[in-house]
Image (cartoon, rainbow, N blue to C red; front, side, top):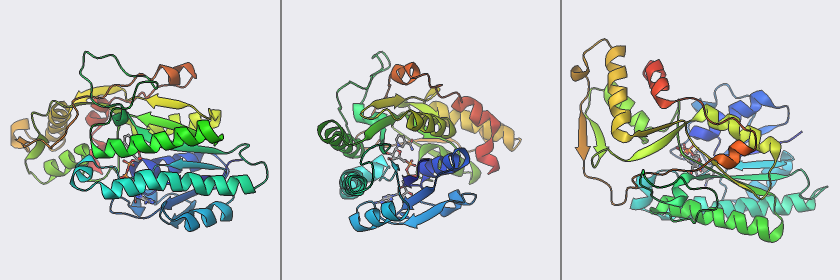
Length: 323
Ligand SMILES: NC(=O)c1ccc[n+]([C@@H]2O[C@H](COP(=O)([O-])OP(=O)(O)OC[C@H]3O[C@@H](n4cnc5c(N)ncnc54)[C@H](O)[C@@H]3O)[C@@H](O)[C@H]2O)c1
């Protein structure tokens, strides 16, 4: 029975994952989070597991938490995750995303190699992103896990650097690591600074919806609950040393997302579309990738069901507006 440490478990994806895992398994589920601006303990209201406030860069605290709860698996969601912030100041991204990941692996290595069985039945999952592969056009072929990493913003570069440390430690030293790179997630309880919650807030407050540039940047949208189910299945399979791409079920541009949400909100409040917030195109950020597109055939070959929920359908269900 695995005891799992979920770092960044008070964040958007980590909190969905901790709750899903608690529902599925009998071992301990321990959330470990520094409680940065992007965390929210309300996301864990119905979580009965253990919550530890701590920094992944604090090797003593990580080590004592691993020992206290006899942790056998670690899944690392803890991160600075907002591209705009990384363009303003890269330092927190270097600290948490790169140094923090290395630190977590070193603490795990120390604890696991000192405990019975060493690396046997142990697993470290690094949560990465499709952004590490860099920008594509729609005509380009989707990239598989062997594609070179070509990040084009500081956030993506910090995630790519962390991936390289996980690969080095796993292939070089036999550390039980694996990496999962997903496309953009959506679902309830996402941080306010991300596109979909921002559009919801503007609609509710009758403010213009700001979209960078011409709004044509396109993303593959992955429903967070689909992603958590896939991660749990992957962890059960324990494919140590492997990298998996996980892709969303819908590909939509930022403009398409905003338009679809306007229509859904207008119908929710029973008004014509023109009577709700309008879209305002604003100065694009310094670097803004047009499209990411990953090939997830390796995941499908594992016999794991792909993401099923389409963003279009989720918007039509109007959960964003009810909450
Ligand atoms: N959200 C997406 O669409 C998406 C897509 C692909 C990959 N990812 C990756 O998934 C992971 C989770 O993303 P998210 O959207 O849930 O992020 P989030 O910003 O909502 O949550 C991050 C969490 O990490 C915590 N944290 C930050 N620094 C920490 C530190 N030093 N020590 C411990 N905890 C710390 C924060 O307090 C927060 O609770 C990230 O690694 C991100 O790169 C996210």
